[in-house]
Amino acid sequence: MKLWTPLSTILRRTLPSIPYFPTSQFQSPTYNFSPSPPSSSTNSPNSLTHNFHFPLKTFCSGSPENFHVRCWTCGHVAKAALFLVCDSCRTIQPVDQSVDYFHIFGLERKFDIGVENLEGKYKEWQKKLHPDLVHSKSEEERGYAAEQSGRVIDAYRTLSKPLLRAIYVLRLEGVDVDEEETLSDPELLSEILEIREAVEEAADSQELNQIQSQMREKLSHWSNSFANAYRCRNFEEAQNSIRRMTYYERVNEEIVKKL
Image 1 (tube, rainbow, N blue to C red):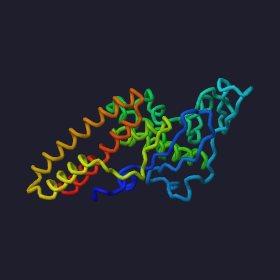
Image 2: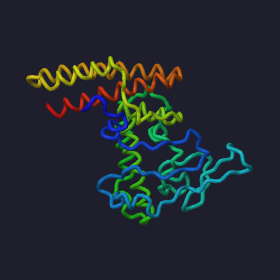
Image 3: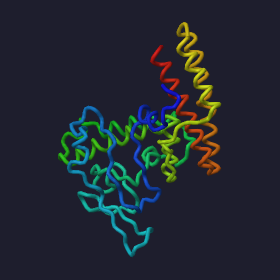
């Protein structure tokens, strides 16, 4: 890793694609390019939007309070964004971009979350979307199940990792990390250089594990720093914390490769 590598290059190497989602569910939805599970036949890039339909959304009297989502199969009208199934006919619904990752796991939209409960909910959703359980459904509904499964996978991966979760919550606020910015903090550059040299010169796995432990402490520190900045709506400092976390995460990845 070169110290002058743009942050955009680092993020592309380490982070899954995280689409930007508008903070208001009343904006028009955008296509979801999240990957579906490897076992699905709808996973190829050319098939992600094949036969893709969004829930029918209407406005009554032009008021957000009257925003409705209509089931694509039975026409049932829901007054809230739908995730997974229709409340009436239980048909699997198309991915609705107004449903954010926190909604999927029944969590409040914030950075500090209890990740220990994510895995259980993740497995619960994946069981409901397993191909063996939807094989008798129509081809269209099976396609929606694969798309929903891919979105659950993206949501779990994003929320379970502090760095990805930090980037995601900022994007939900309409704040995007400047992916073209090159890190110029001389103190951090010097620190990263020393750490990389220590990794390269480590004599055995014990030394690598010690360095890795230090990286985890630094990641924890800057994760807490991000949480404080985010709570205070100090998005500039929050982005600075993300940049730090990104570089320490890259160092950690280099250590994992050598172990």
